Length: 202
Length: 223
Image (cartoon, rainbow over all chains, first blue to last red; front, top):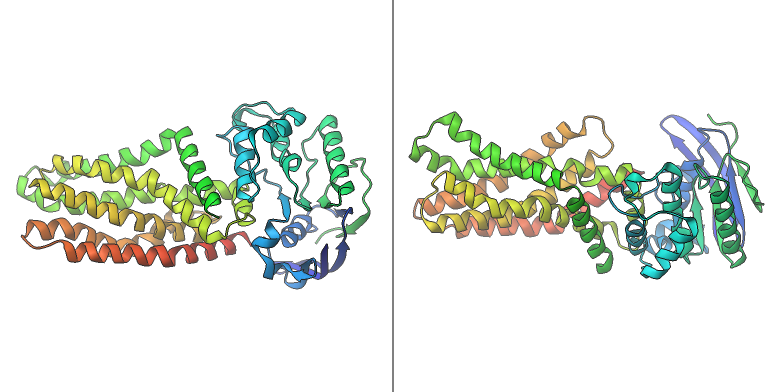
């Protein structure tokens, strides 16, 4: 499904990585490994089309993502470092808006079920802890049926229960024929089918 | 696509409702700036009547600029802007929706308050209040749309606020001239319709051109 060919990324004068190639097929889990500053976030941003690589190309079902744009965006869920939840809104309002922005509106029952599974209280996000914010952002995975997930440090700030719930969801997504690309520093107790190592960093 | 635009407008209005103080600050700023002039230049009625449209327009420019810094910055900081870029609607639509929300929050209230400020200056005949409000109704959306370009260009820069003012204020000059000129023309016994036509033309040009420029700037800022 997703294919990267000879990706290279430069930040200023530094070359973060080069010659990164891989292909992710349905049901696969790809873990991006590497030290701090090795370009994991940059790689994910390139994969979802937010940033453009200085060389190389990303293809989705054989077509370069630059040509697909919104068509490709509809097929993926990207959860970045910043959780993209608004402090002044409640988790369910946030989730409803995120789903509608992605062009996949979800009904109130589905939203409640997703947030309920993760145990996120219905308070303004301002009043939630870091871990609960992360859960509020991740709740999107429980309502999404997009085939490709790009997750940047999804396990950050999660407790053991949260990690287990996320592992379960990632597992069921892969079993249903979805693909996941994620980064993490922790041992998360889930088996990746592939690892891309960006090395020690520049 | 329209559903996404409606969602963004609704969201921005909801956020403004949750943070009413931000909206009130910009409006109070408008009222206070406009009220300072009589204290500074003296209470000579003819002088006040002459400067009223210009003062109200300048205050409107500054007040509309005050809230521009937050137009994209907050969404940029918490990652929502990235999600909008990856959303189902083209970025141009997102940008128009955000500009529209900004106008509803910071421009439309000015249109409503301006006649009251005009009263304070004893603007003159009843027709003048309508002319002033109509000129603001046509002009303030232009301010929001042009301001959005500046807000996108200064996204993520240190000291972006001051740079934003330097970038955007010169672009506001034509709107200021034709906007303030409407009331002056009516007072001089001329028709204000050329000014209104020019304001409307300016509005149409910015509706077509500004979203494209803003979307490009946002894309560059996030790359």
